[in-house]
Image (tube, rainbow, N blue to C red; front, side, top):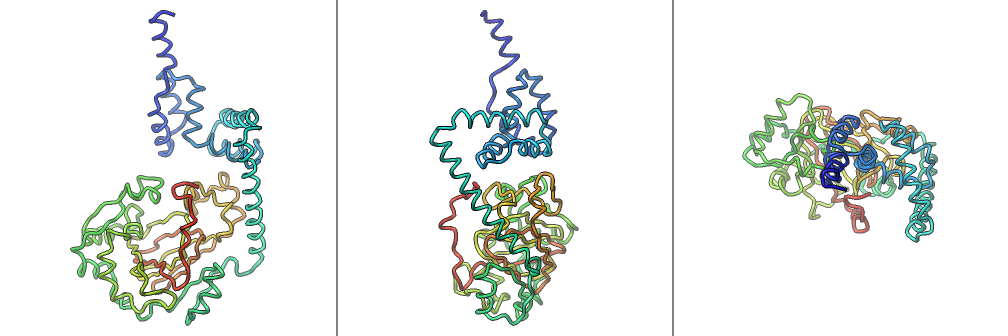
Length: 396
């Protein structure tokens, strides 16, 4: 083969540039049309078959189909789900058939045998959780969160904390100075000179909660208050608990005198007793996730809507990374997530002066209905450290 012929072939089907995998992934996440991306790559000389393989990888469909085949899911169902998600029928069939062939060709390999065994164990665990969930749904209180006042520490521990059951405390903040003092103007006047960390341009990133470190910036509290007051309804910027851990600690410490007395269920002497601060305009959203600890969500200003899902519904919630899900509870795609049809969602409107106990593992989606100031606490008087055996950070 002469050099001219070889060069021509390279132009027709050049070696795949690994940087294109990142380019594909970013453009697919930005909702670009896969067909348009394919056309761009075809014009660059790449073969359609090569593009399809890398497109499937960028979408995560190869790994997804392999996982579900290991879980003994029906191949036709997998193809149907991919098609409903926008994958061409022929491409979906090709991806699934490729993974089936890999499994068949390596059926006797110890890794494949171990993976199939693990898949059976996962199926058994999911069966237990789904069965318990169906039994739980028989209860009339399964879609309600009780609202309690004068709840003793012992009652709280026995009826809610140990039972992994949410509850709204309606009178826990009645003696807090914060309930009278805390407004955006108060924060600006008293602490406006402090620098705070906030998240900005959240609406530019589909996974803004997961990628919050990339969206963080520092400004004065006075500047941020002005942004909140003039914002109207937006999710584009927000001061959240993830910003509070270090950067906003001086502000939280300065606010402590207004947050007394400590709720009777919390340990005021614990190292993390200062809590975590959330402050933003109407329209802020914390997307569906679960926490690794029990939490108290304490509402000081404004109202929030909290959508709760029992922890035992885990197998139905498309948990694809760490403690997150791609399910948008404000706009549920039942074709993509058909299991959601079997999930009971509990809606709670948390009003100023109330505290919501969110048990560990319970999924929640939070929306600010008004300009709001919220505190969250994890310093319970009872055991609340469960991360030592949690080994799937940044994974599933």
